[in-house]
Structure formats: structure tokens, C-alpha cells
Image (cartoon, rainbow, N blue to C red; front, side):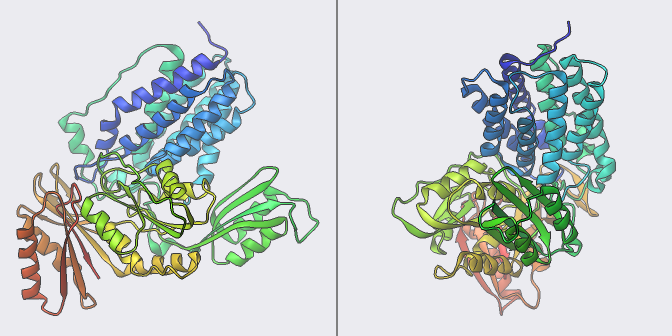
Length: 557
């Protein structure tokens, strides 16, 4: 029996089942993290993101599907965790915008919504990379648009979207070298397929396979790769042609410097000529721009032609990479009600790390990072409760940076995001914080300090694999330096010493050892004694960090 309209019931069922289906398959999506550490995260992040969207839809009392779509988008935005969760929220931001005036949805409405969602997501990502969740979304949308040319049956269109997304998923290894090396599909793309399958099941009432558990052969094929890199992790510093991440918000018509009528496409074309990674979106009141350029002043001059610059921001570029987390729920700690000039908010996990950050000048800590990516809402909540005039945020994890940047536009005070990707970088950045300096000055100085520290992590491998020619044995201790596995050893002390040998060079001065929940003082002291014997000129500090997953976090400065 053909179905020609999606009403509140169908839409709510689609989101509900999608949330349930991804939750049931989150562990499988997590397993697609080919880095052999005990903390895959993409499935968990995407599941919590879609659960936040479902909660918002479920709490809405509206019968208007467009209003429900808006609730979904807002819920996903506030609940977005990790890079894949943020991109998912952007897909449905475009989706919801497409249907905002619809009481119910036809097949054409649905197909166009997916198509608009893809366009929004591509524009939102700093540097779109094929072979990721974006590719999967695009293939699904293209299949839906093609199908709607020959049918008005919504179920048939949704089936086409699912089928197209699966085709896109199968193509991800051939589009992304790191996936091709191992023959594994993109984890974020797999999560999106589960969402789309949930939509189809909720629409038709026909249940599919609820949970997929890979067998040993599947897992063996999934793990022989250098790193399961995220959509932001497929390029190097050398590839950055435009060095300043520049943002502005223009209030249209307020004190413009020209009588020229605002034209979004014209502004976009101009900015595209002086930069890349461009986002340029507008409504009747404001235009928002994000662009990478070597000429920030030209961007702002172009904006002032049409109105007042109500917000500007510039970053020295620091690339975003997926790092590693596990599954503790992040909770923003209680914050002071006293007005303060600066809130400095850090993400970390472990009582010892919290105390260390506070001793360095951090005012508020969000529990998470190495143990769970906090959501955009967690970061917004911490900023709002800080009662501060301005705020700096240290994500301390590359997979939190996108969610943190989303939070900037959701609060009323100026906020800067320092691109710290490790705990060690976050602590080093705090040494450059000056409470008397302006926000942009602190941001620049703290960003500049990030490259002065090397970050090392010790953890156990959860399976056998081979990465960059290094054979890794399940149960052995791996030494990971700035995201690259350099050491495999059955003995934790020997492995830590080897990792330090790889980190130390002639410019090294200070080594800091942070003891985790699975580390101990005696072993840490043995490593310190080794350093004293071999590198007598270096200063070694030992602190209790209490972090999970990693017995030792080590920084070399």
C-alpha cells in the first residue's frame, strides 16, 4: 500500500526508531575505529546526538511537521558530540530548514529535504573530504531525488535514500586512502546508514535487522590501518594554503558603507576568490561568514559594505583530528555565581587533572574528553553558568573542537576556542594565559604555544594489528605520540621508556608524567629514574592525573 504523506505520527516514529536503531548498533560503529585502543567513540557520539534530537521531537506538542523538524534540528545541535555528531546535526539543520513551512511531507518534500541537508552539511564542514559521512549523505540524497521523479510513494523514496546511502558507504574505502588500506567503511557514514534505516522502519513499520555484530574475520579486516581519521583528519599542515580561519557576523542594513543591495551569492563569490573552506549563509537580518584566507581584513571590509560587524573572529589555523575517548558521561561541574571577567573552561577526565588545570588558572572543568566527548549543550551550559564577561574553551581533544565551535554562536558573551587536542597541549596553553590580556590576544598566544609540546600516551592494545609497519600485539602496551603509534612492548615500563626516547630531542627541557587510574607511583618513579640516568639535564615532574584508559600521559616541552 502506497504512502503519500508524512504527518506528525510518521515523522515522530521515524526519529524514534532511528534513535533506537543507532543505539543498538553503536558498539559496532565504535568498532570501526581501527586504532586498536579500548575506546571507539563515533557510534556512541552519534547515538547520543540522535537521542537528543528524538527527545526534542518527543517533547514537542505540535502537529506541524515543519515545527517538529525544527525541534529535531535544535535537539541535534545542542546534543551534538564529536565531529560525526556535529556533521549529523548540520545535515538535519538543512533538512529542517527545507520543511519548516510544511504541515506534512510529500515524497518530493522528503527528497528535497535530504538534498538540502547535504548542501548545508558540505557548507558547514571546514574542509569537506569524500569518503566520509558527507559522501554517504550525498549518495542517499541523490538516490532519493532520482526516485521521486517516478513515484509519489514516500516509502519508495525513503528506500532509495537508504539504498543510495549504502552505495555511498561501500565507496568510502575507495575514496579515502586510510580506509582503502584496511578495506573498512567510514564509521560516521555507517552511523548515518543506521539512522536512515531507522527512518525507513519507522515509516513502514517493517523491522529490519536490529543489531549487527562483526565476526572475528570482519574485525581482522577492519584493523590493519594507520588511523581511522575523521572528516577533519585527512590533511597536513603543509596543505593549508590560507592560514587564517576568519569569521564574521554582519547585521544587514545597519550603518552600511555602500548603498549596494546585499547579494549573498555575490559576497560568496568574492570571498571564494580570496580563500577556501567557505561558509556564507544569510537571512533577512544577518549574514554569517566562515572562510580560510590570508586576508582577514578583506573579509571584514566586504562585510561592512552591507552592515555592521556584530561579531568577528580570527584564528591561526590548527587542524582538527579525531583522538581517543571512552564512555563516561560528561557533566559540567557546578560553577560560581559571582561575576568574573574571564571564564577559562577545560575539558578533562580525572580528579587529578581537574586539580592541575585549576592550579594553572582554569576556572571551570567539564568532565569528559578522554572518557567521553561532551555535547555542544554541555559546553554552552558551562559558559552560561560561568557568569563571565568572556570565555576561553580548551577542548583538549580534537574530536571536541567542532562541538565547541558550535557553542560559540549559542551564547551571548565573546568566546574563543583554543585548538588543544591533548591534555598536555591544554596545560601548556594555560601557561600562556594572561588574565589581563584581551580575548583575541590570549587566544593567539595560547594557540601559538600548542606546537611547543609533544604529547605521549600509554595504553593497551585491544587486538592484534599492524600499523605503519609496526606489529601490535593484543595486550601489549602502545606508545602513542601526537596521534601516531610508535611503540609496542609487553612491559609497560620498557614501553614508556621507548616512547620517551622517541619524544626527546635536543630542544627538550621538561618532562611531565601524569599517572592514570591504571598507573602507579612506583612505575612512574622507575621511568623518572631512567630519565635522570639517560637525560641528566632534563627536569622531570610526576603528578597524579587519575585519567582512565591511559596509565600514563606524558608531555615533553
